[in-house]
Amino acid sequence: MTEEEIEIVAEELAKIGGVSWYPGREKGTLMRVVSDRYRDRARIAIEALDRYRASKNASVVQDNGHREPHTPYTESNKDEIRPGSTVVYRPPGDRRAYSCRVVEIEGSRAYLAPILRACTDWVSIEYLTPQGEVQQFSSRDKN
Image (cartoon, rainbow, N blue to C red; front, side, top):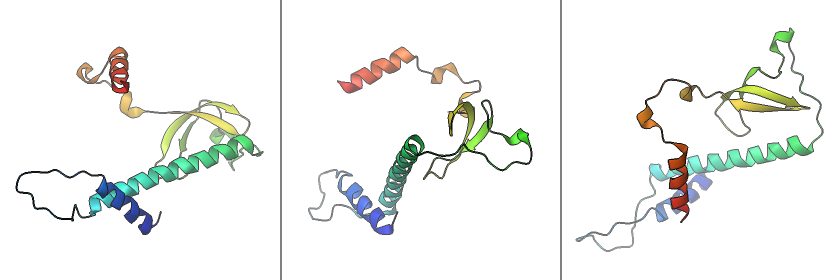
C-alpha cells in the first residue's frame, strides 16, 4: 500500500461522507478537508482488500499447486502437527494471528477451527439474541 493509494481512497471517502445543510451555512465549493480520519479509514479498507487478495492467491496455490507435505523441523515428535493440535495461524497478508485447533489434515492442507476465547465464558443473557430473531432482522433488511 502506498501513500498515493491512501490519499486516493481517502479523497473518495471524503466525497461520499455527506454534507449536512443547516440555516446560515455558507455557500461555497469547499465540502470538507481530507483529514487523518479518512486516511485511517482508507488504510483499513486497503489492508482488508490486500488480505482478501492474499488469501485468494494462497487458496489458488493450495488447491492447484502440487506441494510436498508440510514437514517442519522438529527435534521431537511432540511438535508434530496432527488433528487436535493447537497452532497459531496468520493468514497471508494479515498482521493478526489466530489460535486454532487442527480438525483434519488432507495431504498438505489442514482444516483449522478458531479458538474463540471471547465467546467461551459466562455471559449475561440480556446480550444474547435468539437465532430466530436474527433471521427476522436479516429478512427485513433484504426487503
